[in-house]
Length: 126
Image 1 (tube, one colour):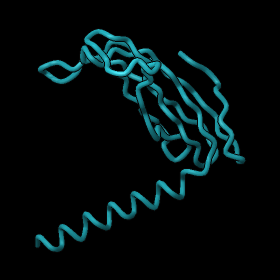
Image 2 (spheres, one colour):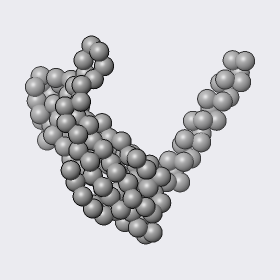
Image 3 (cartoon, rainbow, N blue to C red):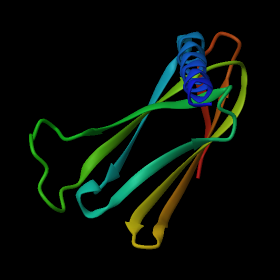
């Protein structure tokens, strides 16, 4: 049973890696939002149509200040990668970690269109 479970996990990891390679050829868009990660505040990125537009990476941009100190505000940058043509709503939720989970403080919705050439166009932002 353990060998079967290990083989299944390996297959899932391989499929995930191959899917990422296949879908990584589209145009990319970077969305930058201010964040305060040292105090437990952070952004989450979610796509309603990941086959059209996916949140493929996120990073903190610290303006080469080196080490963050408590309370520092930084830019959290998300890379969105186009897949197949269509429309996608990307939702960004600014949350704070709490003992009971997370409290959502703010929500932004970006509506994008991806054309057959893999080009990304922002349609609206709320």
